[in-house]
Image 1 (tube, rainbow, N blue to C red):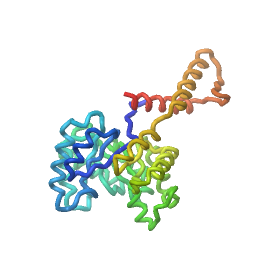
Image 2: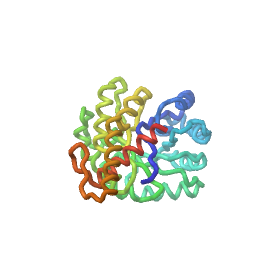
Image 3: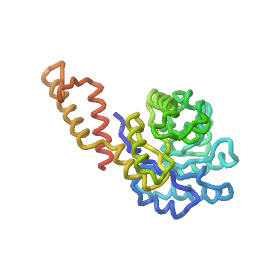
Image 4: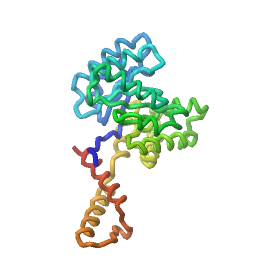
Length: 287
């Protein structure tokens, strides 16, 4: 099993706000997205680019994974954003509105030609009906692409759908993206929750996202960090049960038994794999 890296909470930070970039150094987020796109007005794009790239290159964010969200390929800032991000060498470059494998290849070529270090991954935002239908090809287009990020606001807009509790209008798209990510063996992050004041609704959506299988959730405000980290982390009972599953399975193997039960339920290899994944999450979060 590859080393697990927590991405429970992935917080967008406005790239033009120097105070916000400084504050982010003390926030309990697993990852930060330093944003050059939606959070930055056109007249502040160049200043934000310089600030964000300096922040990403500073090494002052500790264990937090750092991604730079560049402007989309259809904008005048995209090419220079990619060049600057490649030079800064963050953990990842997040590109909005990725709709095809060919676009992933173009992003990869641009980063490599700009000298991006090998550790800088591509994160792709999938936020259109086309991207949902092509999610597997997008996710599998490059080994450098490691994470899909749901853009649920844009998806709802393109579907002419409403934002409602339970997200029924988006469930097909969420499911297609999850299927594509898992088929390609990639991480996938749930979209944002827009009502910062509604922490009860936010937590319910976190629970839904975890039940679906998302690895974590993108956030728009620091007050969303605590419930998100809690929901996407294994609970004590889950950790203890995982330990018992692995112990029982190993003991049965040593004794040559073909059938293993824990709490009255038969245990198979897939349950052991799930238990190992939970313990890896727990250990990584604890460290």
